[in-house]
Length: 170
Image 1 (cartoon, rainbow, N blue to C red):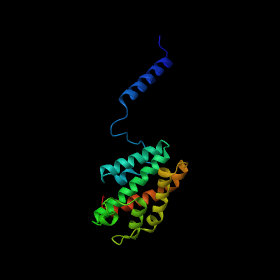
Image 2 (image 1 turned 180 degrees about the horizontal axis):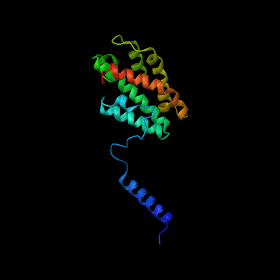
Image 3 (image 1 turned 30 degrees about the horizontal axis):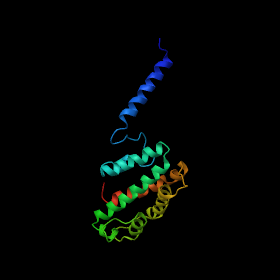
Image 4 (image 1 turned 120 degrees about the horizontal axis):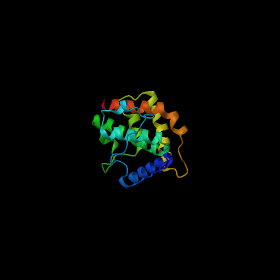
């Protein structure tokens, strides 16, 4: 005779076995919350921007703060490129081989670009966001924590929203 405890243990074992054999969905899971990027901000832009934003939120809600910071870095890089492409000045952010510049140089170019006038808050936030992304991506001994990301939430919103509008993605 099976007890409730045995039923739960069996169900858990079945769930684990199925998850192991099938694996996660091909496109990943949707984050259950929107703690970093409000999805209404990016919805209707580009599919890859929405997916990157979802991954940022999912990483944050699961406590994977380095992954969150690296994906934030990627999103900022992507949005800067989108803005330059929209204004048809993307050649100014490419090297002699036609490859896009590194984030440091993209930010420098975005800050000095005459086709737009970045807001004061965006100008101040970009280096801070780059810094946390760089530490998480490149520093062997740095491990991001919630306290590294949480104070930047306002900066993230400001930068993402400004570049979405500059690229006229919304």
